[in-house]
Length: 357
Ligand SMILES: *Cc1c(COP(=O)(O)O)cnc(C)c1O
Image 1 (cartoon, helix red, strand yellow):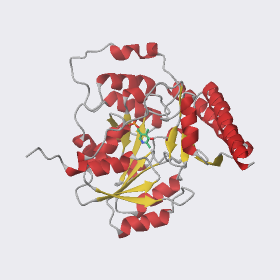
Image 2: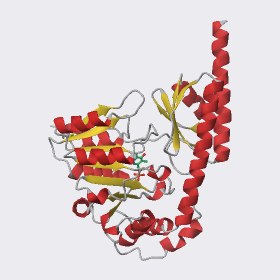
Image 3: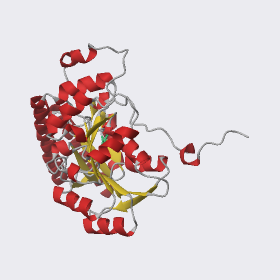
Image 4: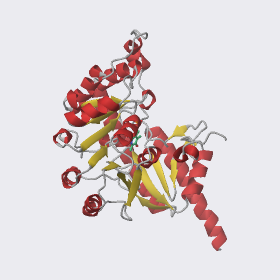
C-alpha cells in the first residue's frame, strides 16, 4: 500500500507570488524605500557559531520604545506570518471554530485549514464595511473560539475604528487577534491598551512601512499571560541573529521610520487622487476605495484585461476578481503607472466605441 498522506494537506499547493522580473512592483504592498546596506554593517559583525537570543530581548526593546509599549508584552516572530501560524496552531484545538471575515487576508483561513480547525468565514457588507453588532452576536451564538482580521484591512484598505475594536474585545468570550500590519499608515491602533484585555493579541510587521520584508520580522503584543503562552509555543530560535540585529538598528531609528511613513502616505494620496481622476475621465474604473493603508483597492469594469496589459508594460499589481490592489510606488513609479493605466483605459474605450458604431 502506498503511503497515504493526511487528507488536509494532500491537495494543497505551495504559495506562489507572481513570477518574473517587472520594472515596477506594486503587487505585494512592500515599501519602495531601500535601506543603505552600510547602515546595517554592524549586524554582520557578530559570532555566528552561537544560537541567537531566543527571546530577542534587545530587538523587542527597540520595538517597545518605538511604539511606546512595555517590552514584557512583546514577542518577536519570523514575520507576522509565523505568529499567525503559531496562534492558529496553538491557541485552537480540533473542534474549535476560528472566525475570519471576507474579504480579508487569505492566510488566516489557510492556516486554520492546515491545522484542522474549523474556519467560519463571515461576509462583510457589499461596501466592505462590517456590521459589528452582527459579528459579536455571531461569535457569542456560535461559541466561536477566536476571531482574526486585519485592521486596516488587506485587501479592502478600509479601517475599523479603535472604539469598535475595543467594543468587540469586551463583548465576546473569544480570542480577538487584530492584525495591524498596516496600522503605521493609520491612527486607530489598540497597541497601547491591548495588554489590559485577557483575550486580545495585536500583530505588527516590519514588512510594510518599515521596509524590511526580506528579513522576515513581525511582533505580537498581548498581556503577560498570553505572551508567556506565545513564547512557550514558538520554536526557541525563531528569529535569526541577523534579523534581530537589523531589526534593532532600523527600529531604533525613529526619524527614518517617520520619514518613510510620511513619504509613503504622501505618494499614496497622490495615487488615490490620480485614480479618482481616471475614474472621472474614463469608464474603466467603477470604484476607488478610500485607503487607510499603503495601497489602493479599486473595482474595475475589466480587472483581468487591465492587469494583463499592465504586466505587458512591466508593471505588476494584484488582481483579485473584479478588483485590483495597487500598492503605492515612489512618485516616479506612480506617475508611470497612471500614464500607462490611462492609455489602457482610453484604448479600451476606443475599442468598444468601434464595436458600438
Ligand atoms: C503583509 C501582511 C502580513 C505579513 O507580514 P509578514 O510580517 O511579512 O509575514 C500579515 N498580515 C497582513 C494583513 C498583511 O498584509
